[in-house]
Amino acid sequence: MQRQPSSARTRSPTRRPPRALRARLCAALSLALAALASCSVLVERRDRQCATDADCARFPGARCDPGGRVCVPADGVPPAGCDGDDGCYSCAPTTNEQLLNACTDAACRPFDDARLTNLRDGGLPPLPEPGASGGR
Image (cartoon, rainbow, N blue to C red; front, top):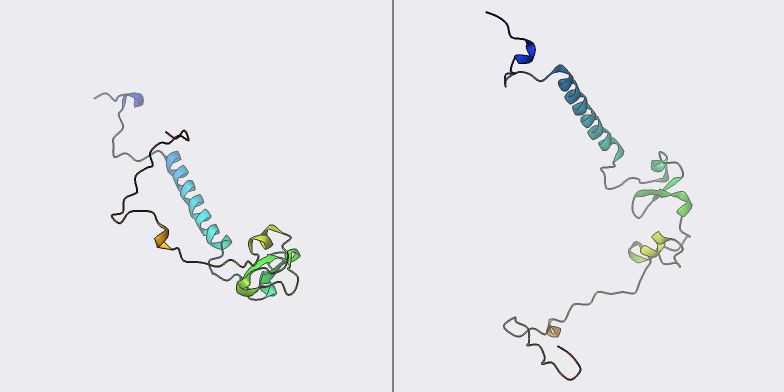
């Protein structure tokens, strides 16, 4: 019996993938697992990042915001007495963060369902007829 040249051989469907492919897959899997592990190290899972300024020592130039229990830049310290009710900023805002957290006198008012113009069956009233004003 004569052997066929290697180029004429057909690959068996149960044959293992080449060694180089296995090495690449192993490297990719290792890299993905390393990225997953580093994510849990970099991202804070607790809802409180700090309790005192000492807890923020790992972040240079940061202090602990006691209201939010998170580390914030120390240069953005609001003046004393600017903390309003419910944690809003009660002084004149000078930064975007202060503006977004500014205290307001806004209040929630319930919506009056009687203002709806739907008919009793839930439909809409008919459209008005076109008039001399040029409506079509």
